[in-house]
Amino acid sequence: MGWLKGIRIEEFSFNDDAGRISVRAGKIATTPHYTSFLSGNYSFGQTLIDQPKVEIKLQERQPESTDDPKPDRVPKETAGITLVTDIVVNDGSLRITDQKARTVEATQINSKLSLRPPGQPSRFNLNMAVAGEGKPSTIRADGQITPGKTKTGWSLKGTTGDITIEVNDLDLESLAPFFALGGVDIQTAGRVSGDAKGQIKDGQLEGLAGTINAKDLDISGPALKGDRLQTRELDINVKLSQKDETIDIENLRVQSDWATASASGTIPTTLGSFTDFLESDSPVDLEGDFKCDVAAALSQMPKTLGLKEGMQVTSGQLTGNVQTSTSAGRRPAPFARINCSGKSDSLQYNAEANLAKLQSELGQFINIGQNEMVGEFLSKGKISITEDRITTSGSSVVENLRLSSQDGPSASEPKIQVDSTIEIDTKDSIVSIRSVTADASLGRISIEDGVVPLSSDSGKSMNLAISAEGVDLEKVRPFAILFASFPEEMQLAGIAESKVSVSSE
Image 1: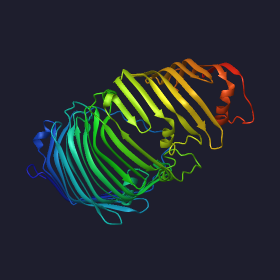
Image 2 (image 1 turned 135 degrees about the vertical axis):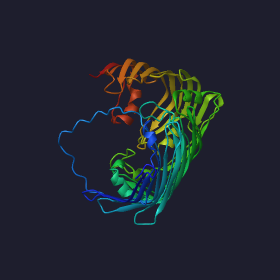
Image 3 (image 1 turned 180 degrees about the vertical axis):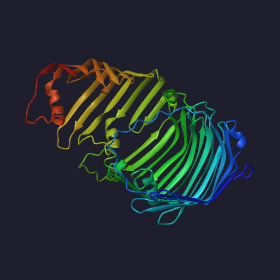
């Protein structure tokens, strides 16, 4: 050690008393700029760590103490310290052995980290090989980050930079000791290669491009609730960028054994950009398609996807296509058309859908029972969206509705018209039903001044006043047979009038 020679340590070694951690290094050398310490700018010049070797042996976790926890210390503010240094690691290694005697080793670790003050670019690069019991893989990462000149605290605001990561033929099963070290209970298998490059501007991801290629992927663990995600092939290709309040997708493609999806175009990320997206002269479009083997997906992940216990899906394909157009604000779909105009605070809409086609597209995936549905759905109205409130008013019509079951019973209604005015308080989670009126040949049902809280913290109780006028029980009978298990041999006739009040404390 000396003022001119700096600090130099050779054959450094450390072992903890439990024999769990061992650290060795052939040489550690640094050359501090001592005069910088006087101004609070700690400049260590270049710090070289030669041939460091770290070994960690994990032990079974001890049960947590039942003693009263000690209160956390309140952190005290410290004066701003600027650290300037270049840390170089040559030919390092890290070896971890978990509680099941599985070992993973990262070798040939060569890295350089250049730390600079806020407002100046800090750079890093890392190269290493990772191996468990099989063939080693290589990992490379490099980039630069320029933090903003924040006066206090940690913030990404103002941060810019770029990061590149490359992984070649990584054996996921070999990562088990790393997961155990981090307390992550997950089991993985398969081999993964990939690369990604991202750009950060003012603390937000501005661009991302990358690919992932995986083979024989097998993931399980408590996070999947006992499910198991498996695929022999997984290919992901993505290239996107964020501009202002939209995400521009140049290319997005996902392909696995049981699902494929692709997309390109623009996605709005805020209420304002969503409004612009719906404008008739909007220059943005979105196009995509997907295909999923529903049986394969549900057989692997029934709990994650919410499949009812005991239910089995043996076949079924879910396919779809999304393609927006900007002609007069129209956003069509295969079984529906939606036309919109205006801005979010006064959005005019009209929509139409074929119920049979809707059921054909979604029936394989959504359990809507054994009933077949035929009819046309038409709707028009106005939606107003503000920061904490959504108001809708409009009229919907279902024409030539016919519901039939495989057992034979059926029910039909030539026309149902529903007029409604509803307000949703998104801040307090309250739905206010100003009025809902449903008119059909079988009668009228209406709700006035109803309140429905969406959470226990809403501060209001449920209150619904429902009235039924001129209900023809003979016309209601077919629907009661279909949905309420009303006996087919029993007759029903007459005109009913009723008022029902529903409330909760």
